[in-house]
Image 1 (cartoon, one colour):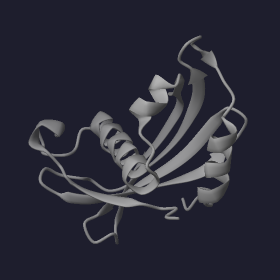
Image 2 (image 1 turned 90 degrees about the horizontal axis):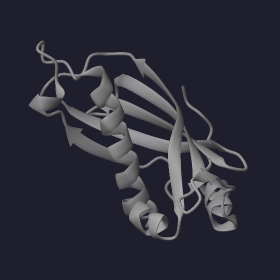
Image 3 (image 1 turned 180 degrees about the vertical axis):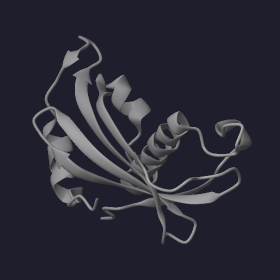
Length: 142
């Protein structure tokens, strides 16, 4: 099973500041979109289906490291990996590289806390989700 899936994106004009650099807040959007794509394409996990079952996640922490500038029309490679989990949370590390996957541009470490969408309260990971986490868990790289 793939533990570090990758996806390529082209940086859009409307995501950039007047200097043509990717806006700081838009890095998070690219990272989260990539992770959602990775879940669906590599693990057949559809967040909409989980929501229908009452399983949801909220972001309880984001930590971003901006390393090199990303500019309009650049192609970037985003890699994500589950790097930690506990009773009711998942920690995901996402890395943005240049199109060749050689130069690290940014890193996002996120903590997602599971909630029960019916009650709105924190909930423990399901046994199936814990098993999935054990299978794909990988050490942090940054």
